[in-house]
Image (cartoon, rainbow, N blue to C red; front, side, top):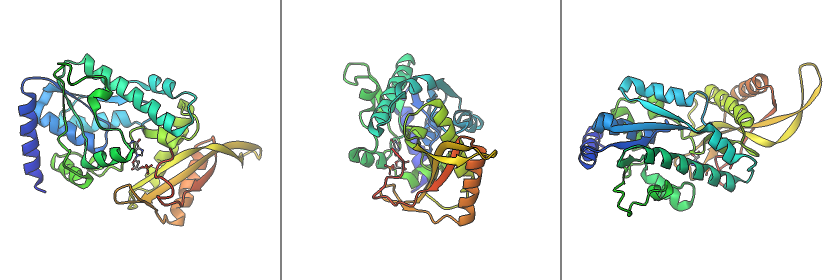
Length: 311
Ligand code: XMP
């Protein structure tokens, strides 16, 4: 792919489509929405408003570090605080499909409110070719975004969605990211699911449980840096197991499972053969640094029969 030409063409198309109007986009910090943000700002400058919905299910310091990564490019990211709304909608839900649905409904409600409150006429979306395929298989809900955020495109609202990455697969998006001058940690970022840490928290999703899995995910990401893998993360199980505290007393603590997989396209996956010393270091840090955790496991299951995430 000729990256320079792709960027030039998309910038020109976005400029022409939006004209003198305003556009808005939601940035998650993943490579797709990051590329759309950078392309959109190159085309539109201040006519594009970029928002980051802070749903409380992101990794440690993610909202601030995403905003900071865009600052040197002259792009201001407005963080919209919606944590409480997500935790209240997820309260008490344990069923994986109900969890996904609650997340999705709240995400579209919040995004819809932000979009409607702005005077934008266009929404820039980072949909890529694989999203369409995953939507058809039911992994993601990416279609009919306007309908999902409560805007009827036929109702004379004049609102339009622009999807500049729709012809690309992930490797192409990564090339464009580098071509746009985005930092390598964004261009090469591991996939992170839309519902965030909620996909890695079995049982109820609440601030306390999310904090445990957030700390564990951070440790796994730090200790597996440099190991070639599609995704490496931690999940918090619903069950508990007995452990021993430093004073010798018994404690019915939390269990963290570590998952590290190789994959081409996320449709199938194989567990990564992590070196024993890496596994032991991960266990030592998780059990040592997260007081609530009494056990650390490693998941050996390929996909299929398992999925990559835990819900
Ligand atoms: P599974 O768990 O279905 O995941 O094997 C396949 C790939 O998709 C990611 N994933 C999601 N991404 N919304 C997303 O945007 C979701 O609800 C979702 N669930 C899973 C997962 O991280 C993996 O890369």
